[in-house]
Image (cartoon, rainbow, N blue to C red):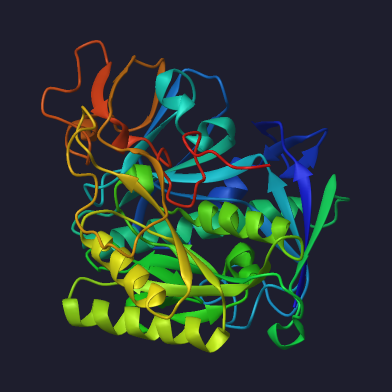
Length: 425
């Protein structure tokens, strides 16, 4: 399986009569974009706004972030199981509008949503503040159920990203990268074999993730090629706390996969990705951990990198995976964030095991922030007091807010995709 990613640089966005890329600017035909989204009758209103790096803009409450991509050739289109047939992705050629993103927001669907500030202190903690964001303010019809609300916004974000991605289909990329792995059976020599165990939140109640359109809590842990995630096979549908929510953009640009690819054949052999679901019942956690450990054992690897999504309840899944995989003689490295209180002195994880001897922290989500008012609010500012990490009376009369880092989208991403993460070069 070989995937060629062609990256088309986007350094600015603007509205125009035609959706196109010209001189590193993405021009968006607003009416045409809305027409692609308006096919969902559950949406009562659709508004499109633009937010550029450095602007005095606050986007809230944010649901998801998606990178515009388009298949130039290959057996399928982007986001299989949602916008195209359920056929395998991860091969062929895909073009990326690098530097642009679709952000979905609007009336709050679940209390664990967040904000993106395009400037100020919060912008220093979110990778999304550095992107040129096409923001969809989507309001559902009155009386719609919360899960229908989330689904309507999720599909709108995917449709918008697919539509915008078409602008790069016939362009010559500024940079091209090829991703492929050697078959496991062909690997020889002394380099250690490493597998990536990627936990996908799947607790229900708006805490869901989808693999080829299937809610992963309905399936057993699955071995996939790393190219599949970056080609749209994994879609976020959850409202976990904003700081460690893995958006669809994160799945498309997973830095753990990028780093393992970078080191592949040099100091390790990267053999693939196991997607492991994160459930709420103890029996389901045991089943998932046992099945994941079995796949690790069958692959005959020497090491495993395990990334968490969420906190609290998922800490048990993380430690259970670590314990069972270490018991096989396979060395593990865990990547997680912490909820250690505003002073950093509280217990940072809800669970632990003596087998966890290598843990990488990507930050303390309880750290306090004082955020100034912004000239423009996209969405609704009032939910800042009720979303996870917000407080009653946290919103000041002048529009400034007192919040935890927890409210900032991607601030402590457990894939290491945040300014708080240190990455070796």
